[in-house]
Amino acid sequence: MTLKIGVIGTGAIGEDHIRRCMQALSGAEIVAVTDVNLDRAREVAEKYAPGAKVPDDGESLIALPEVEAVIVTSWGGTHARYVLEAIRHRKYVFCEKPLATTAEDCLKIVEAEAAYGRRLVQVGFMRPYDTGYRALKSLIDKGEIGEVLMIHAAHRNQRVGANYKTDMGITDTLIHELDVFRWMLGDDYVSAQVIFPRSSSKAMAHIRDPQIVLLETKKGIRIDVEIFVNCQYGYDIKCAVVGELGEASLPMPPAVELRKSAARSTEIMTDWKERFIAAYDVELQDFINGVKADALNGATSWDGYCASVAADACVRAQETGQIEKIDMTARPSLYGG
Ligand SMILES: NC(=O)C1=CN([C@@H]2O[C@H](COP(=O)(O)OP(=O)(O)OC[C@H]3O[C@@H](n4cnc5c(N)ncnc54)[C@H](O)[C@@H]3O)[C@@H](O)[C@H]2O)C=CC1
Ligand SMILES: O=C1[C@@H](O)[C@H](O)[C@@H](O)[C@H](O)[C@H]1O
Image (cartoon, rainbow, N blue to C red):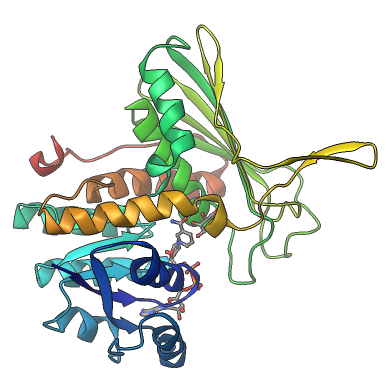
């Protein structure tokens, strides 16, 4: 059986996921796409899914009887309403990160799904599908570096667009680390603080960039993450985990080492689409397989909620400059509570 999918939001990652479903993965086809910019939706449909319908809005797409599952790749602030609508229609939904831009909205999704009693939602946190992070977690789980004490991480984008705001450094960018470290450590956060170094003159005047986020977990692990979204030189994701017996670092993507003109160099990617291309493929294939088996595997609504609770605290910490507490509600039984 071929899973019939509708996609809401045909921007950068929406287009890429449509291409992925139609050309790289198996067992699914895109039967409908939409975007607030309908011309853009038609253009992307023509390119990758010529037979797809282009309804006027996301709600109409979700209601189409032929749409069996939904992919939400619109702007973060619009995710919650589409995910809730998909749950209302009892349709599986893959929602790109963040699940919602506030913990309050994530909780509405958790409650709606828990009330239904079965998983319908997978959140697009792809790093747990990345071979580098998987290798790092496996090594930690085997006890190779002993108990984890600290993580030093960096999330650098070459540059961001004019619509990017300082809080998006948290809700849009750091949210990946907030999820992947919970998964890697099997731990939750208890507090957050944000420190702003001198701002880069290469960043637009309306944003503060870089920023350093300091997190503490229940086990007492301390994590520092540098968010620097106008670093100029490339897309660079770094993560060093320090334990009682040693340090383990996220491997860099393979790159040819070039020796030329009395210098040795390896290329650094510039585009997130390329850096995690294999992880996106495996993640979305897992969603397709999970829907068909009636058993989703990837990040849950609860994971989306936990990342957002921590993100909310970080956004508060950006404003107050203080250490902000991170408190979560009780975990519903659907998510192992
Ligand atoms: N997992 C990952 O690594 C990545 C995830 N993302 C996430 O994917 C989402 C989209 O990001 P991009 O594709 O980079 O943004 P984008 O701006 O390129 O595309 C978003 C599209 O959604 C459309 N849109 C906005 N509101 C809408 C609405 N209410 N209904 C229908 N369409 C609407 C816009 O017109 C635009 O075409 C964001 O939540 C972002 O955080 C983005 C990049 C990478
Ligand atoms: O998810 C992503 C973007 O939305 C976000 O804006 C970037 O900072 C991240 O590196 C990328 O992975």
